[in-house]
Image 1: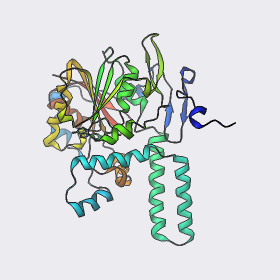
Image 2 (image 1 turned 90 degrees about the vertical axis):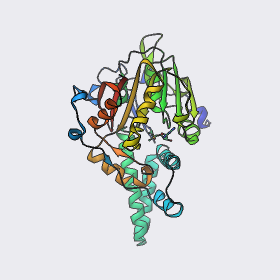
Image 3 (image 1 turned 45 degrees about the vertical axis):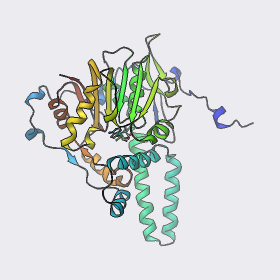
Image 4 (image 1 turned 45 degrees about the horizontal axis):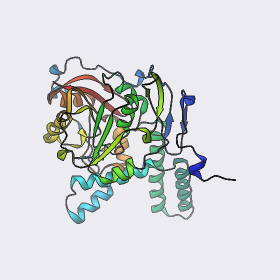
Length: 349
Ligand SMILES: C[S@@+](CC[C@H](N)C(=O)[O-])C[C@H]1O[C@@H](n2cnc3c(N)ncnc32)[C@H](O)[C@@H]1O
């Protein structure tokens, strides 16, 4: 007898027995290597700058702005005038989410089949379109599924390691699916995660449909040993609101954002950095990551423009990112880069 899928697959398919292993699922990689976080530092190259007060914008230069916008945004603006920032995020989230849930081997083989079919009928316009889709699928398969560059659990664990917190309350600004706060909560369990995003779809779909069977490598406070955590085992609350409306006081041990700062032109950077300060307890940590400025990232945003480029976006290096953080009143405790992002751990001065 064949069991329905929900009964055939246990809700928590990975355990300590899988430590040291990595598996390729159809949409993402499962990575349970290095459960004790001992040899993760290869992913995190820190300490390029020893005294941030000595670094100037003249030396660091300004970030690179990604100017190619998605077809969708361009056609929307032709008809309706300038798109609001919130609408551009709503479009981005729906478009990006589609890619996280694709069955990659299946989609890639379908798209190659399509291309060959158009080719055999000499439909050149369709061949071109199918070729574009095949390239995007292959790129996403490599960046997200094979390399695990977007979630990058090993890099994130290296960045988050060694924080002086116990049962922390964690606030995630612009949380989308909430991945990084779940990784933090797994490493530092027993507290609470508050995810904040003003796009309702992030709560219902990006977080709501984040795979329940995805294993986060973390810590078991009862045994002092590594353990596997799942989304449903965590204490998570989702607030759908503009960050500007949050009424929390200085009550969080950690305030984190991932890919937020680079979406604001310079006039707004001070306000964004202030969001990372105003909800922190004294001694709390602000954690920020932004996409790295490197040739392969520029190519990625060019090839994936229709999927990714709905909003204002900059690519910056760690010095530029660090200067924004430092000159807006934070001391930088740790800085460096993981696979595709820069990462900084800071504290208000
Ligand atoms: C680039 S995403 C973060 C990257 C994320 N890790 C991802 O995979 O998409 C930034 C998120 O911040 C949210 N956001 C931007 N401005 C916001 C604001 N003022 N208040 C609340 N959420 C905001 C957007 O809706 C979006 O989901």
